[in-house]
Length: 155
Image 1: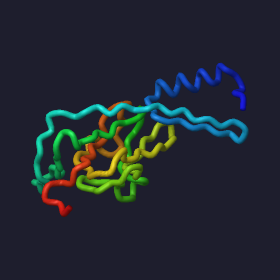
Image 2: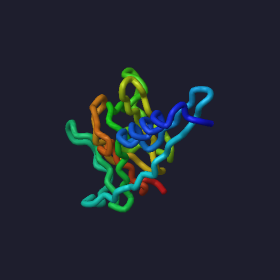
Image 3: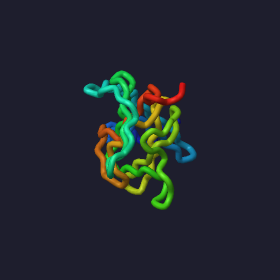
């Protein structure tokens, strides 16, 4: 299989590198390729262990666990983050939602292209950092997943 031109390949790779995406796949019937970037996970710090705190007033509940178990899910590209598949539908996840690896937890939209955001690990959503419909930058935290069960949860 041959690219139509080396310039096209270079342009695609350059755009991929600038996008911050972790994976890109292209297929037009005769040409198919996939580019994948391994993503390093940054450790979080300054997170205290606490139980699920019921909401008081308008503040959403927040579940916290040990720093080693909290994994921020960051935006893999610049775009608009959506919590739900459509404006009139329920969000994919909320605080305290149990998730499994590769479960869809949101959508990133850029130039009318919708890319799924998936959970990188099994766990529980502890923090939602971004409101629905907000523009985000590549690398910006969208939500946090804890790999430990919330305090008081059944084992």
